[in-house]
Amino acid sequence: MTTAKSTYLKVLATGAIILLAGLLMLAARPAQAAFPGTNGRIVYAKDLGGGNSEIYTMRQDGTHKKRLTNNTTSDSMPAFSPKGRRIAFVSNRSGNYDLYTMLADGTHKKRLTSGGLASEINPTFSPDGTKIAFAANVTDGGDIFVVNSDGSGTITNLTPHASVESDPTFSPDGTKIAFASNRLGANEEIYIMNAAPENNTTNVPLRLTNELASDVEPTFSPDGTKIAFTSYRDGNSEIYVTSSTIPLPPMNLTKYPSSDTDPAFSPDGKKLTFTSNRFTEWDVFVMNSDGSAWDHRTVAGNYYEPDWGPRP
Image (tube, rainbow, N blue to C red; front, top):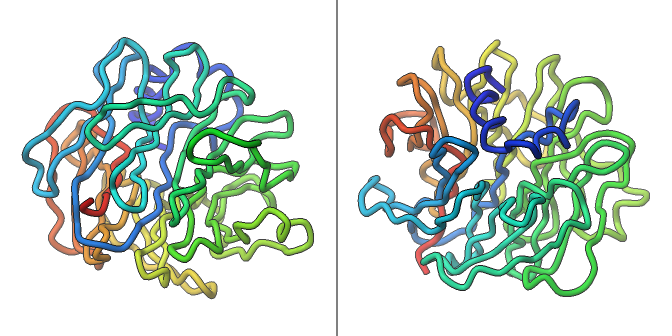
């Protein structure tokens, strides 16, 4: 994470960032699932200053921006549901970073968690819309949890491991979850595990990356064959893509002397949206899935954490 982005994310987190001290992996980062369909709107967060961030949507060409949240605290990390009708997000309006959902027009907000875990972040829907996976700060570092998307039932820990796991994202068929972990060293790598908790006691997650620098923020392509992620192996953050089934040398898509983060595939798989500070401030960009023809969709305002939803 770059110095510039770390600075304003600490502002967004205000006092709650103290809960994450020493847990760089649990800084505010999205990890979105890409659900196949016709390209719909892009949802993102905007830093308004003073610890206040809000959630907006826009058309894929950057027009018709709409504000969905409006309060004096931090609303961030939005993620679309599989049919594009709901959005999960994180808010500290209650004093703790908890999970919420709302309809895609910003109405019918509902709190799903109520402070049982410290700093619940990185929500992502399952492909059938019934579950939300997320990361949370726990005593042994950070783990991946899953909860019913209506807030009912119990919260299940998928990674009771003495390390730090974050950035969960479901595969399009719902059987796997990609995530970032430092379980084999100081830096973070991309792993894939079974989504069913009963399968993770004995099954060892598949490690997809192996670098001296951190690889984080995985996101599946809509057909499930690829994973895009953010890597710091070049000295700055870049967007890479690799196979989701076997460890292969990943390909750098951005190759730009700035910081590029927060990748999310479009529902048709032909494009990626991401965040970059290549024009000084953080903006939301769109590029082809091969890294070509990039262009920004927001201008000069600290916008971040985009997710691309299917048309409802």
